[in-house]
Length: 295
Length: 320
Image 1 (cartoon, rainbow over the protein chains, first blue to last red):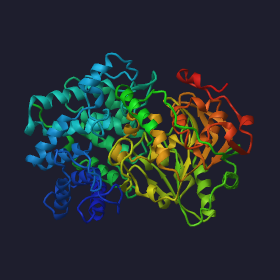
Image 2 (cartoon, rainbow over the protein chains, first blue to last red):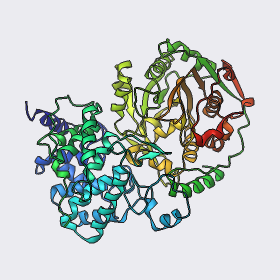
Image 3 (cartoon, each protein chain N blue to C red):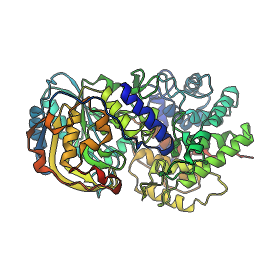
Image 4 (cartoon, rainbow over the protein chains, first blue to last red):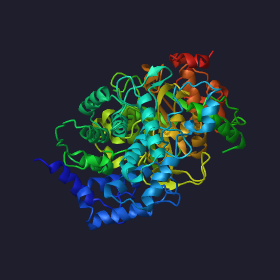
């Protein structure tokens, strides 16, 4: 029955919400920002409900003084999932001071290989990874090198933030990060975690990274993504792994690709997969990850 | 972390700032001065009844009493490709599970894959669910488990690991015998990369590469000392491992409490000189590397030696 797929997942998410308002990666586990952010996005049509408000309050309480977000209640370090918190603010249309500090923190971060010092030192050293260091992306953690996933999450957040936040620095960082992703595209048309090849041998694309890279490249004016979308569709058809398949469906639907609705049962108490599958449904809120205007 | 390894750590971090991976030639700490036991047992095929072989290996290698203990089996799950041999075979994992259960241990299987976020998807693709229908009840995704701080580690003021891992009385490393295109060989010690929670530190365990692969392997093995190893060398991988290499039949399982000695023995069986493996040298105070310090049980590893193919960058690792 149409709509059942999403409804089952919405019910499962509500039933597995922790008392603090968040979600763990698995039902019954402690809350983390990533499954909580995706859980709240998946419940996008319930933003006025008490359970949504409890989750939102938890997310807001996890912002650190520097504007970043911590990944959960135990770890007090700045974390890549700050991008998800910013995207969630955009989905809720809450463009207040915490939102602005989150965007500002994102704009301060870059992969360590793209700092001025690293680029200068790079002139004198062999670049056997082959990355062009001027195209700065985002790291998983501050002070480390950039990778496709955190860069893609940051791109989605910044593109969603652009109409409210604006500014030339945001546009500049978006352009550089798009360039970084495009330059790390695998020969098969998708994306691996961070490189297109290792020791001269091509690396294969993965479902989850291909999906996220495409989400990050939405509305990129210079990108011809036709080959990548074909690859993403192939991966979606081949992929049995539920997390990767859900991310691919979210991404492909945002590019207007028509996919049949899945009829698979809920997956092993895996909250992130459940939330992403709910988002990936035709009426599932995947458009919340579409960019705003960069103008 | 010792002063020497800390120096190596910082030097490698500076290199990896620019390269993404360490190529620093490490200076090792003073070598381990005691003796260790490693058992090598033949296992021709995954179709063999592996549980009695594993029980014999545990006994030969001096497994301590595990009755009533919490044992975490840590296989190596990286990627799946039908054409090659990337992951620890599910048959070895199931046999190890049965063996430890028969000894009265409370057994959990845990892994935090470095390359793929979807741990359950990977366990399905790698055939774990076909071999072990009750996996749900016994498997923990170490990438996404609840976490607890151990304090300073790898240059960070606080470092977090899975609570299931930290609660274990014994961590059993269950790697595949493989070559590795950055580390030379990936065995019991390198397998501990999967202990680091990706949900915090990212994929492919970015922080460990950034700090230098050899330094990170040594640091993890310095941190977790309640360990045992069972290496799946029934079919290993040669060439461009750990993912893109070719299967190599060895027909053996390797056991030991001293996982440095286990890895050194595996290197010799693969035709690799353990004295040239950086992470073994950085962990030289933790276990025996020299064959003269290792009491071998079961098969003579020299009689099973096969030359695992090495990529051009690692030809110099070949054992004379």
